Length: 230
Image 1: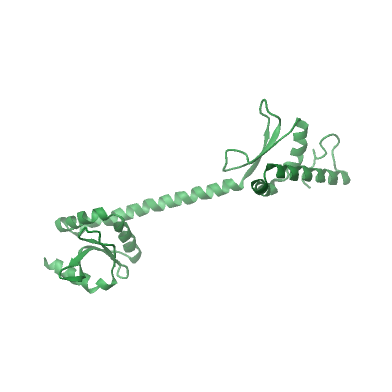
Image 2 (image 1 turned 180 degrees about the vertical axis):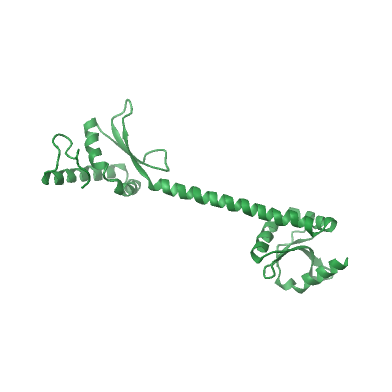
């Protein structure tokens, strides 16, 4: 063993008790980390003392980075013996270029993916909170109204009518219920669309009666035509 190798052996042996090691899977070497010192290593046993370790390769980083590189190495047991050969043939720098830089690159990619997932989840939540009221006038179908969440491509509630004026009568009330749309969605999920239809009809009729009592109702079939939610 070279003089440098002897120095490395003593350094590893002095702190062997502080090492956290990956399981030995028969590759002849395995990753270890001394988080306190910020060192990540590739070690092997020192015969005949099975408790001592010889550091084939090591790198000095900050404690968090050392742990991240160790975790990255631990997930790649098929590469351990290759890294050991590279260390013997080309030195620590060659292994660091693969291991440390590879771990950092993967960590950066994971961070980007995590941030992308967070932004996508945030956008889904934002869209879910947005509920739109639509007027349905498709051919060969009765006139209707629907409520649809921004993160869905199908309405969670559809209400059909025999005549357009009936739809417009309900729409005069429904358009001012936007603050309750989330409540309506919860009701549909819990009790079904019929339960919400009952709430809509009852709410509309109660409001019509109140507006008429106050002398603010419009004439004809749509008492709430000029009502503005007041």
